[in-house]
Image (tube, rainbow, N blue to C red; front, side, top):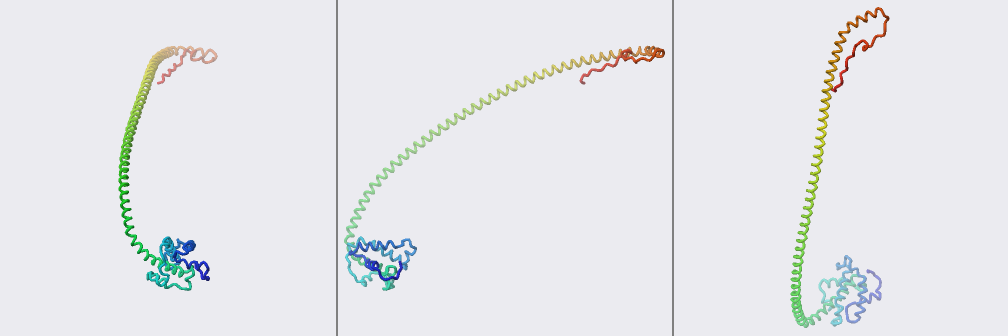
Length: 309
């Protein structure tokens, strides 16, 4: 916004922004145009040495008292008299204003001058309003008192209605809570009964399966014992048969040995005689094929039967 160009028609218009009844709409439009140029989020908006600070203060004052300007009469146009309504700090700031830049809205001096003019006129108007307000203060206080009484009466009515509604809601909540607890208790009891039934059914089923398994196991055990007994009896019977056959074989063996012994004795007795006859014949006859032992009257030893012992 800062610039050093000659005064433009727009800048001349800005010089007429001091609040007044005359040209109010025109002034407001101009201020609105200025407001659009202000960076309200600028970090220097609270720095009194920055132009945004003075623009903002001027616009705030202008907007705050615009609606009251039609009720206020201008008292004094003399700037020096109005300056008496400024604070020491405001007068110090105003003293720094340079006439060279007072008409340039891009300078801090322009906005300091505009702000001081506006705030001084505002304070003059406040002096007038103060007298008017003193006369209206009593009526306002009575109005406030009556309004307070009406408010208190309404508040008591609303409070009573609220308390009744609160009590009703608490009773309803208590009933719902009790109903919920009863329902929860019933569901809990039903669940426990169902769980107990399932538990009993499971135990009965388990016992039945256990009994069935034990019966099946006992049956298999009895069957196994019976088969074992049969096998044992058969084995014992076969063993007795084998012992009987073995005894028979031993007896046959003894008989065979006795018979063989007798045969050997007979052979031994007749052997000498046969030898003599043979020797005599051999000397007179041609050699012949040797007779088999059977032919010689000799019997071979009887082979003992294999008894498995």
